[in-house]
Amino acid sequence: MTFKRVVVTGLGALTPIGNDVSTYWDNLATGKSGAGPITKFDAEKFRTRFACEVKGLDVTQFIPRQEARKMDAFTHYALIATDEAIRDSGVDVEKIDRNKVGVIWGSGIGGLKSFEDEMIDYAKGDGTPRINPFFIVRMIADSASGQISMRYGFRGTNYVTVSACASTNNAIIDALNYIRLGRLSMCVVGGSEAAVTKAGIGGFNANRALSERNDSPETASRPYDKDRDGFVMGEGSGALILEELEHAQARGAKIYAELIGGGMSSDAYHITAPHPDGLGAFLGMQDALNDAGIAPEDVDYINTHGTSTPIGDPQELKAIYQLFGDHAFKMNISSTKSMTGHLLGAAGAVEAIACVKAIEKQIVPPTINLYTVDNEIDSRFNLTPLTAQARPLTTVMSNAFGFGGHNAIIIFRKLS
Image (cartoon, rainbow, N blue to C red; front, side):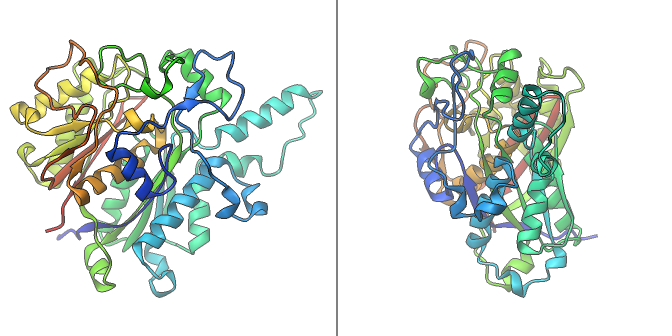
């Protein structure tokens, strides 16, 4: 059986450093931090009082007010990023077979704020459950993909992947395989998350995952730095239009890059900690290379999971060296979470966009706030510290790992 080739023909982004792809990329390339004091609730009594929030967004510019009230923020973000991706793709949805267009979306949590608000209101009452009739449809994670499909009339496969911070990469791999097999001609993929809430910040504070550098939020996300103390919560969304190559060529679409493979594995070790030797990460990256049919030496750049937690960063680099050998020192490696924060289930989406734009621009975005590399990390790695680096980029890998030991890795290549 001959698999069909899959390409990226549209991008959309709503991030802490830009509410569209162009602004997002410009700020990535210039090393801008999206972190600042939390504005969405009073965080005075929380150990962490900052986050990477989406800024300056008027949802009603994109979604009618009456409809927006029925949705959680993570669904707003999903629709806004998808709208940009659809426009960017240039596709006329009235002229394609929408039965062959799918929506596969990633979200690690779903409508956390909606759940939080409803339960706080209930707890303040006399025990009578006066629950908002839109509570469930706001909260459930698949409302994002459902709303996207309804907006455009896409009637192909439609679901949400939930694998914590690997959720979007799992969605992208699923879409890759549906299109490869000819089950879909096009698929909207991506992820969204809106967990800068009392429960989100308080929950991750409780398990000591978040940075507490309250005196300097913009320098708090510092992957690989010896003084890192945890990740910075981010929010937002990223959307990609994946399309079968001949389908894209037939309509004269702009093609950003080819999606050539995806790999998955499980740590089978601990619910929050990565395997101490990076075993799951190694197996996932190896699976991705095999799926893409390429050698380790073909990879030019890895956008790492790189959350800035003391426990996670060295293990990922151990796995990279184990798989890539000395080629690991010839590649560029960077963590764009140093600028965006960690968007949890949406992280893979915005990082996939960073990879595609890196190929288009032939520029590797930096790891900002990396001043002194951790002693546990081999100094020969090119971690792209502080400033972006220009270099020829043909093949780029993006890693995403999640609580529960989920690992999902995708690989893009310049179209040839």
